[in-house]
Length: 277
Image 1 (cartoon, rainbow, N blue to C red):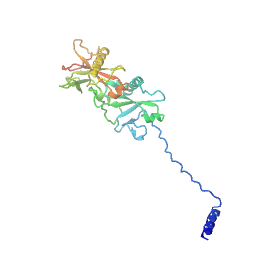
Image 2 (cartoon, rainbow, N blue to C red):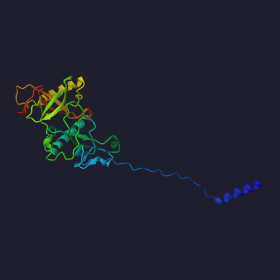
Image 3 (cartoon, helix red, strand yellow):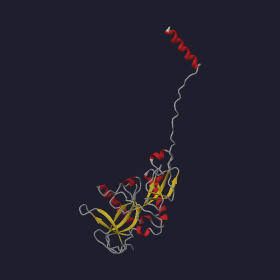
Image 4 (cartoon, rainbow, N blue to C red):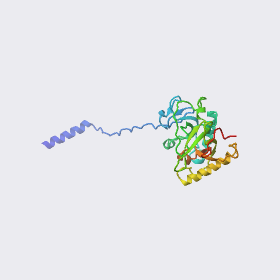
């Protein structure tokens, strides 16, 4: 009897379903929108660049490290040393016009800005020319130290305090290597003066102050300074050398920035006034 009742119950359930079928539907996946890499804006200022954050941009009257003076978009990003050197030459010419004076005569650095690898994979194709104020001129091969500031570098009141003229180059007593440069008024005793700017050969190694190869490279750069700036010193009887101060750290040097400021250097001797004719 129980079997008959169980069979009737099953039959009733089938009739109740009336032939309907139950199907399982997978939930639709949620897709986040792909972020679009940002592009710098000419005339803008920033602390550090970020490809995906609006917070990278800073008003130029607030503290910032870099000022954007040029942006080039499209194909041909300078990713190898030769193309970077060519792009830097254009940026430096732009910097002279922007500052209304020669950039390397001021405590200013000119750098290339590029999108990061992730942004390049997402299609970003641009490079920018950045101006940064230097806290001091480095002669020891260290990375440049940039100074946060709250004005545009092109402001007419700013350049005079950044102009590099005469300096005292100090030597380490143990290693006899030059370790610091102190800018001084040319009327005060000093043993060095900024004479010019050169570009080291692209095949040249980094002029390290700690390796013998670096010392050899520095001698080569010093010789190049002497050839290119032979007429700077007015007194032909004066014995002097040149000390090359590269404008980039080791990383940027490897990427093609071989710019060098050339200082006439008198060693232990000091003078007052300019050495220039």
